[in-house]
Amino acid sequence: QRQAKDRWVQRAHERLYRSRAAFKLKQLDVRYSFLTRRAVVIDLGCHAGGWSQIILERVSREGLVIGVDKVLMEPLENHHFVQGDIEKESTVRQVEEILCGRQASVVLADLAPRMSGSKMDDHISSVELNRSALRWALKFLRGNGCFVTKVFQGGSLEQFKAELE
Image 1: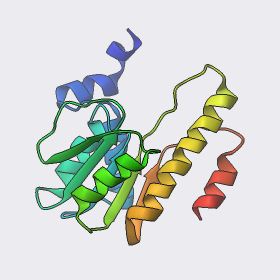
Image 2 (image 1 turned 60 degrees about the vertical axis):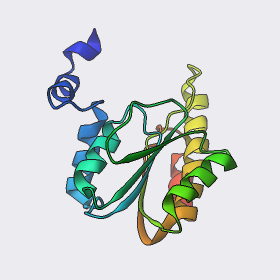
Image 3 (image 1 turned 180 degrees about the horizontal axis):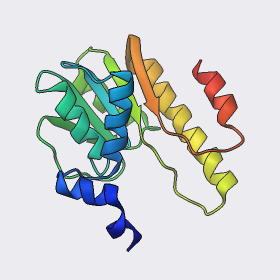
Image 4 (image 1 turned 90 degrees about the vertical axis):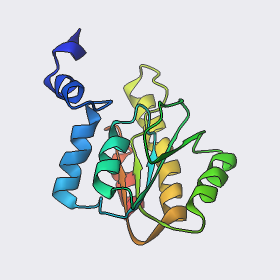
């Protein structure tokens, strides 16, 4: 019920976005301008597709968008979906095949761990999952590429930020 009253959920529904998270990515891109025409973008944790929809709008048909998630996602036009775990080498190989030697301009990670109910444990799991996403960024990003991720607040956040620098 709370979701039904949420104005961002309503706006997403009106604009045919698959999630309210689409608006957050739009806001980030307006501020930092990292999604450009012809960009090569890897969207980790892409289910339900809200971020991928925004990416596709911004990079146009000339770009390449690869979404990766454990959960099967409804297809999007001009979107390459890989169902797999980002911590498995088989998933990395599938993305490498789609890239055909190209490097990504952007790696996005909107990942959430399986929730335990413990804020501290969930935070630690979030940081670990984002370390995996960072490994993807280090592997696939070109030299001046952009890594965008979302991490749960908690005691390990500052250490993780230091690792990113």
